[in-house]
Length: 394
Ligand SMILES: [Zn+2]
Image (cartoon, rainbow, N blue to C red; front, side, top):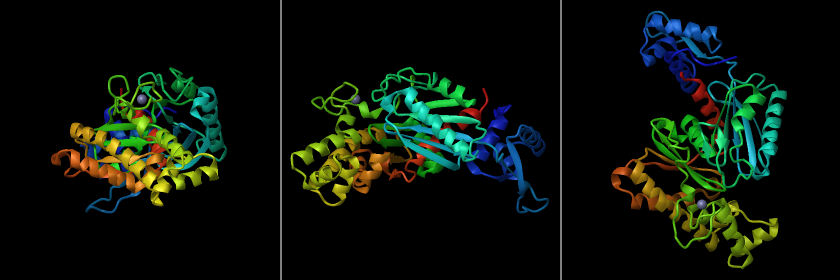
C-alpha cells in the first residue's frame, strides 16, 4: 500500500495529524486555511486511501459538533538505529508512538552483511509478536557520514566495509517498503524535535556524545545536512595542533580528547598507572573501564575522574560557544550514552563555558539541557525521518 499524499494539502494534513494526534475538522480547517468543503474533499480522499479515519465527535464550539479525524490506526513505521556496538529497532504507529522495540549487541565494524542480518532478525521478531505485519516505511540511522541522496555511508571512520554499501536499496528490497538512511546524530535530533525537549523550538542544536561526537543542526524544523551530508561533524574539528591522533587519521580532533573512546582510553591509563584508585578498582572488577565508569567515579568524588569530566566539558564547551555565536539556536540538547553517563557535572561545565564565552544576545534565552529521551531518540527520529519523506509531495 502506498501512503503518499496526492497533493500538498493532503501532505500538510498528514503531518499535522502525525504531530498533533486526533483533531477536529474545524481546527484542522483553521490550521490549513481550507474551506469546509475543500477540506472535506481532501479528507475523503485520504480516508479512501486508508490514511485517515474518523474518531468520534468533538465537544461543541456552539452549533453542530465537529467530527474528529486521526491518522489511520493501521499505519506502521520502522525506526532502525544502528550504533557502534548495538542495534535498536522499533515499530511505531502513524503518530510515531513506539508500539514495540527490540535490541541486540553487535559491533558495526563486523560489516554490513552481518549487521543488516541482525536488523532483519529483530524485525522478524517484532513481526512474530504481531507488530509490523505491514510496514509503510523504514528510517535507518548509521554511526557515520551518509550521502543522504544516495542512501549510502561514505568513508565512515568506525564502519569498515560499509563505504558506499547500498543500505537503502538492500533494506528496501527485503522489507518491500520505502527506506530512508541518515546518520545517527541527525535521526536523534529529529527524535528530540518530535517527542523530546526540543518540541517547542524550530531552531536548535543536538550534540551527541557517544563513542564519537557529532552535532545535528535543525533549522526551521528541518535537519540541515550541508552540500554533501557532512554538516555537524564537529567531532573532527581540530582543537589542538599537538593533540593525539584521531580514529579519522588527523591530529588533535575534539573526539581524540573527549568522546566515549577517548574517556575509556584515559580512564584505563589512569587506572593502570594507579593515579586513580577508584578507576583501578573498577578496572579490577570488570577487566575494562568505560566513559560510564568515569561518570560513576566522578559522582563518587574521585578527583582524577572529576578532572576528566571537567576537561572534556571545557573542550566541548569552547567549541559549542563558537557554534552558539554562529548559529544563535533556540536550544542546545546534549544526548547520547556518554552524556547520560556523565550527567549533570558535564552539563554544569558546558553551561559555565558557553554562557561565559558567547554573547549575551545569543545566550540570554538559551536552554542548554540534557536529553530526556535516552535511547528512544534514535528510533523515534528514524521513524520521523521516513514519515517526513512520505508525507510530502514531489
Ligand atoms: Zn578526527
